[in-house]
Length: 444
Image (cartoon, rainbow, N blue to C red; front, top):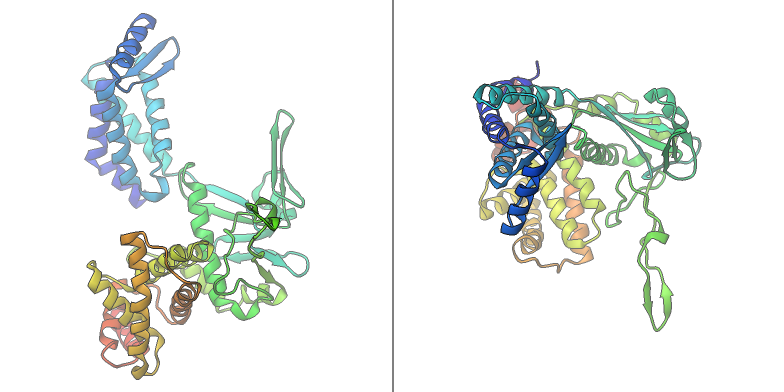
């Protein structure tokens, strides 16, 4: 049994909330005449209500029952986390459990029985596994596409999808399109596709897959940078990995000059055989595997989170938003303080400690980070958008430089707090790599 399953089974709050809701709902089975009266009264009083039919009966929830249901959804969402805590999925389980009320008894025992059945359905929910298949518009081959693995994530030529997924529905084509009907299903996929295994509920699976791919793209960008024919430069807007960006989808600019399109230039990663070889070598493959499922509170976990925020920063078009997201990546990995002054000071100090091999240069780097962080703070606290192109690019440069420097040096199994201790100690004038090595030996 997984840790999450044990947590669900032992969590008394879920069972209590479910029991309270189903006890109230057991009094809400109505016939047609009562249903019309219930609906009329609630509409006249402007009160919320919810009605669902099960066989020949309806269950009509009033304001109190809806509040109890929302509380149950909230408790479950919180306990299941971002992988499985999807409100729509949980409400669907609640609706399924409610169907038992039309044939069951409406006493306390029945409410408890329904609550336990609902909890069992949650345990089934967290066993769900999916494969997300999506078009890859971000990477292009100079020659024929070849399969590439980034940990558990695959970039596959579209003609290999049927064999890989076991579903005979994919055909190679120019654009991503889908056809579903009585005669079957057909999905046209461009030359390269993403295949992402995801442990999540149906409602969260695509969102989680996007995040995994975002982290993988940043990992590839940092670890394989000499092997790209072309890659998005600092400052360029990088397309989201599942999304096609075409000038015909851009808004038009009109004026005295007529009508024009001011679309950003197409941005993508051009790859060849050298890149494929790099993703299979003794440096990249273990790196991707160690970052695939890192332990909570480890350096690897926070590093992968930061990789995802780096990609989100490159995908943002607004300068202020890009600065905010790049600093989020840095804060994810380098800060443990909560107050504004402490975050600013510790972040600037830690970035300088990592990047400056010459101790005397740390002060200048720290000051540059503090100056840039002011724009991030103005965006968050004042809604200010006054960030220039150069300030945005400087922030991206610092963020990617920090992660690039740590990529092959940071022990991903080390507790993140131990790494923060290393940076604190090294900030007094020593090289952080030597302190890190000593600290890692102590822990090991």
